[in-house]
Image (tube, rainbow, N blue to C red; front, side, top):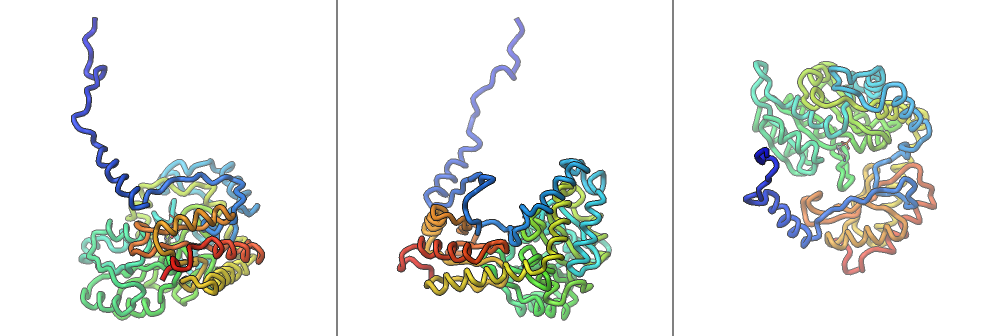
Length: 403
Ligand code: PMP
């Protein structure tokens, strides 16, 4: 008889290496902070004010057909990283068209906006080798997690500055004096407010620093025909400005891009780890985004429509006595009195046929939880009114309204 091999006789572990997860879970549960996944049915009857399909393009027949055609022609996946087999003619065309539309010299597409932000921050603020000492990264405290993670990964000095405060940026740059990059969202994803881009660019220029703007919520919504917040601020194509965008919101697809001067893009191709080591953007996503750009160029009124709907939602909830940030783009943020009340309110909205976002810690750092409503250009006036009515009707009691 063969002896038992060690593999056949598993011994009980000395200690459960994941026991800490249960304790952690219990604590989060008690604080009402456990999240669960809820698969969305393909034909949901809900009016969607929770997703980021700002222009209503994700199911546009031209977009879905272009995505399907790209998959048939090029395959369901990119097959490899961009530098090996993952670059197709579709990727090149998307880069050309995105750069031209937004007013930049060049563009580079990534598998997500998250990866694009990690790439831009780490490659532009990383060690400059012989060419420069450590850079300073100046980051707005309200920036998106992907910019924050980029700052964490970059081997640079960091200064986190108060929200939307060009003077604080100026001071941080002056104190450092060397190579520097300031990073900001163009439209902040939680409250939907816009960054003071011209003043930030002025602060950067005064100190020879570069400015990186995450225009995830500006593309397709702000600027002439949806060319984005950076274009609207007159900064597109500037030699010291870089923008990142996502293809997954207004363009209804998936993926991200960095837009900037030719030499910056060339630097990313050889130095950005999320470009070099990540499988390229799926051809279907590239094809879908290209078709969405075509629709947006043909129907620029979609950008204005989504802004008008956001303003109308805001007007109605404020008129009903709620505290809401005036929207600068498509996102309307309505205060809820507590994380529990926000969760309950979002659930009641769902019961009433409206899907809304619910932000609470740790997605938002402070004690202010919010309902997050995202406007969509393809909603009718009647749907907007009905949605606002349902949100107001299901709200927490008056004494619970956010302050
Ligand atoms: N930046 C901002 C401001 C965002 O809101 C998001 C998406 N939530 C991203 C970047 C990441 O983009 P993606 O979803 O394409 O990874």
